[in-house]
Image (cartoon, rainbow, N blue to C red; front, side):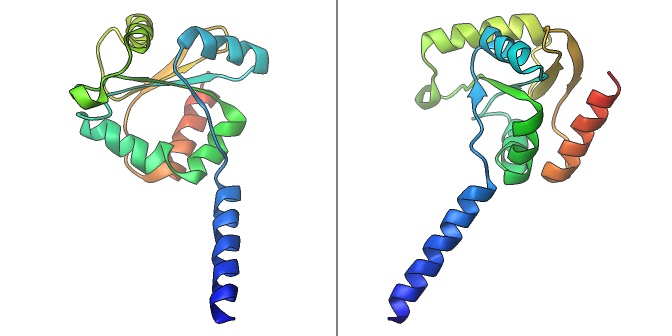
Length: 151
């Protein structure tokens, strides 16, 4: 009986944890992200990362983007887009995706900065560029809010 109760409580805890973290979708195509941004009148948050070689990129993903707090914040405010440039053969992206990522970088990340976070208006105008900032999801959310308020 004790096992059944523990099992039910753990299942409830799992369901509660899943309910707290919304499922967010990252676009992998800049044109599609901008189209969605126009339709929803939300800015685009575009991220350029090197997921298997760039330490600040990995930290930004783990400390901010993977956190439920950021996901709740972003779900209501942004259209999300991620453009990854892994170097390891085992993480190699399909050719079509690499082409799409390179096209987005040619438009928004000519300097080749990693990580780079670009805020775009629904019309595609660059509002701000930033990168990794320590402090976790809450601090990053507040910083993004500040950046958007300036525009």
